[in-house]
Length: 113
Image (cartoon, rainbow, N blue to C red):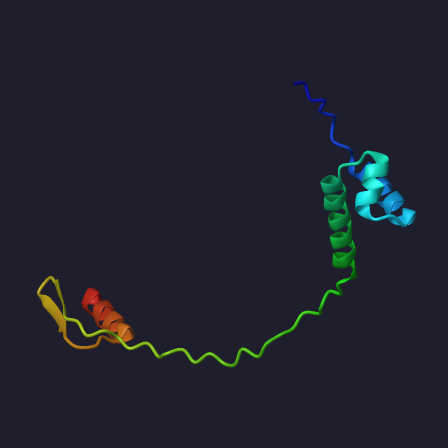
């Protein structure tokens, strides 16, 4: 059995077919039988074009802004640790939380000696 397979119709042709069917006053089924058009194909394009029209009619809602409130970051709490630094004859040791600025000042002073 040999089947004739035709090339797909372009969308522009389907727009004309759907318009003719709608203007005919016939049901889709009756119009398709009278014009040799596949009912499923026609129905597909009718739905596609209807969806396009509905999408075009949907208003685009304006952007909405929500109040975000304020952000209260947690203050940085140094983690307890122990550091011992030996530089020449000096040893600097610290335990507990370390203030980075104080440690920097001590190390600069040791280096300058």
